[in-house]
Image 1: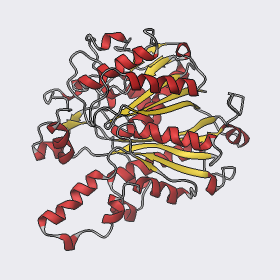
Image 2 (image 1 turned 90 degrees about the vertical axis):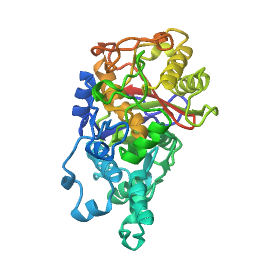
Image 3 (image 1 turned 180 degrees about the vertical axis):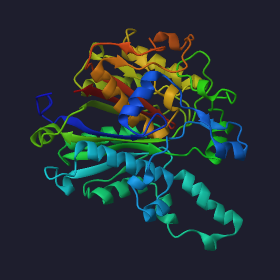
Length: 420
């Protein structure tokens, strides 16, 4: 990665930092090892068991030392989602040394956050005061706890990032949207660097009951570790997880000038809308395929340049069938190997695109495609693609990855990621 500019004259956008808090680990190395192991992280959740929800398991983020990141006062006023997001972003910033003496000036550093549900867990919990008649006991930090932009704001304040600080909500495509939009802002010259990624933490009785009501959850209460089955013929729904993941993006020339370590490049990005249904994908995969093709065009790459596809693949009948068809359309019936991490992490909503971007860049650099957990065999819809399963597959090192993210509302986002 020597050229500082793309063929269209805009700056190249490189990745110089990673940070994650997830069901598969609280460090990038732990995340990678767990995903490569193909071991599901789904477990029964005590709060769900006590509430008697029809589905009582999920993929909670692994515990981490919160006192390393937060004062006691901060722990009282920051809800779980914000704590996960701020901690993951802090790790990414430290990895990149973004705020060191040679870093871009504060006004040239942005924060771009994606979330599907924002602080919904806090809204539901604090809203109970209204129904209980205890409004006089609403806690003082209630407003900052329920602000949808709380994660972005806290990252910006903590690290003195004075550039743009938007929060995107494009369903479960939110993390990928935030990364893509941050890359566009850097290309356009509005900023030189950004902390970009996604976060969601809504593994609560209310949310589980809501998803159960619309029939989207997997039903394997006796064996949670087998429930999340991307592309598998026996898939019957997704497993809810929680996570936060952030990447530090920089102009390539600025990163080189300060001697930053480069993990890879955000080479292409595209977004689209199915414009079809509020919670179901377009069955023919037409718009999703067009989005993938546009991301490849943005990266100045063709289908045959891609080493593997990191699929959205939630484990629902409709999503996985439509995505398999979309991938087949994009690659003209000759798609590269396909993997899906949600068999391990569960469906981590707005954090998915960011977690999957980190895994994709690290694995592609090593020439590996992670196995898809719980995949035993395809059906008529998913046999269109080559799903990697059982164990990791070796491919050519440093090949570009196409990473898909799709969200309720018909939101499509595709990233093309090139490892260093």
